[in-house]
Image 1: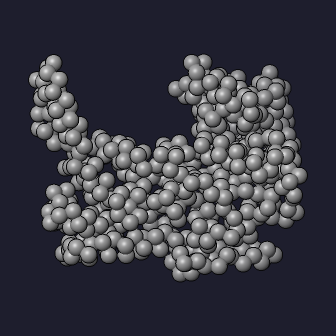
Image 2: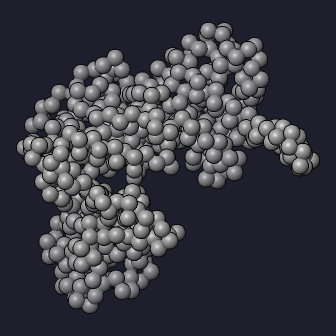
Length: 502
């Protein structure tokens, strides 16, 4: 799984290039608009307009315009507005208007200004230490007096809700405030890696979002070519695995022998949270180029016996760490099984994004034991005589997909090493590869490794051109899940993968 998009400040022009031979007309504009600025700009404009209306209703004003880099004197004005919002000066309506103004200010800030804004919230609006100490003391002094203890615990719980957490909850009640909080967390996550105060605020924001994004609140929607143009734009922008190159490419992925499903939240009806692309085929697919071939004829979905999940993309960077993918796959399997009862096999065609990084580390450490003597001889025979260094490292520096002899010499060692990487290489008890960890946690098994399955620049760079099928076999999913998540962290694999390891 990959989080790829920072939703604020990115612009996508709606007239993507369409190959001349395809001549596909982009879908018509909807009320969301498919002309003019990109959809992220339109989202910001709409949010600013809605919040401006909220602030004007209460005649709230922040005064002179706030500068984008938020210098110290402007930060003082923001600090005062935050305090007024938290104190509900002028009543709840005025407090809500001030919160809307704060949101408008944040949306207009440059990165430097956003960092200053978040730093102010994180450092100055945490739980007051004196109040926390007093509340904890009251709990200790309550002793065995049940009435006093209940009152003290209530006071402690109220004290632990920081002022900034209360402000974040106020944002969630505004029009499109949930989307604002999601994007705010996307901005906060990098700061939280190094700043303890920001980390504390991020934990609070995650708690707020966790209550809003319970899986039971999400809607599963099938997306077709008839969807609003603004939504189709977002699929193009958020696709994280296999780039959507044109409108005709997108339309091909939405044909009758393809499916695309997404989770939506009622408070973010225009924004997919996560989406999956599925190909309906016969047998396990082992080549993504075939699946994405726009010239291939459209197959009869009723004749398919296999559903291949070939791309799963998280659309909201601010929801990193939220586990929607496993629920999405299960819901889609249920939906497909109901609509197409001939489907018997559910599997993925997945990249191995961490493989080359792991292999390069092994080679940098000397590469001892990576290849056999026979493989070493074949690689040397396929390389120029003057080549020096570990033959595997030297071979991978070449444009080997375009050199048949070298590619053939690489096939056996790379496929065996990929099998080892996926099934044996662990980090803190979990598969080192993030995509593998995701599917293994969900109860899939490593079914087959496919040679020359993705020869795109990205595919060769990350996965040495290989892809893997993870098989979701009914009747085995729970056992596979328990085996992987239990104490032994056992990775279940199909016979083809086990054969590579031998």
